[in-house]
Length: 260
Image (tube, rainbow, N blue to C red):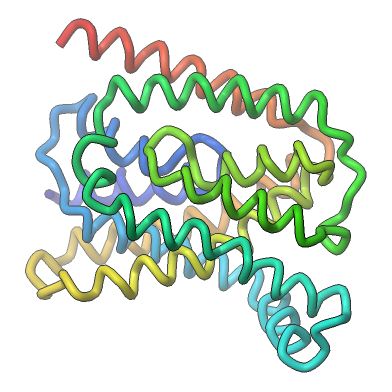
C-alpha cells in the first residue's frame, strides 16, 4: 500500500464512519473498484481507531461529564445515559466476537455488500420519514438502548453501517435526527476502542510505516470535520440524501460485480 492509497482510504474512513453509508463497505469497495491490493484488517481497525480519536476529540467534555455522572449520580439524566451506552455496547461486542471469522471472509463479498447497502438505504429512508422525531438524547430509555444495541450488533456485515443502523433504530424509536446521530457517535467510542484493543493481539508492528500512519491521521482529521458538518446538516436536513446515495452505490457495485 502506497501513500496515495493510504490517504484515500483515510479520507474514505473519516467520511463514511460517521455518515450512515458504511465505512467498512467503502474500505472494501474502493480497493475493489480500483483493483488495489488488499490491505490488512489491522489497517482497517487502525483507521477506525483514528475516527474514534475524532469522536473523543469532538465530544470529550460530554464523555467526561456522562462518565462522571454515571459513576457518581447514576439516576440523573446524564448518569443514566452513561449506563444506556454501556448496555447498548454489549450486543455489538458479543456478535463481533462470535462472527469475527465471517467478518474477515464471507461478509466481504461485493454482492452481499450491494444488497445490504440497498436494503438499509430503504430502511433508513422509512425510519426517517415515519419516525416521530420527538425525543432528545436525554429522553432515551432502557428499551431504546437495548434495541439500538441489538441493531448495532448486526452491523458486523459490511454495507449495513454501524452508524446507519443505530441512527435508523434511533429514528424508529422516536429520536430527533440530531439526537440519533449524537447517540450513535457516543456509542461508537466503546465498541471501536474494544475492537482495537482486541486486535492488538494480532499486531506485530509489521507494516507500521508512513502510509499506515498517514492513513490513520487523515481518518481522524476528516472524521472530526464530518461530525461537525453532519450535526449541523441534520438540524434542518434529513437522512434522505444518504438513502439515495446508498441505493446509487448499490447499483454501481452490482453493475461492476456482474461485469467481473
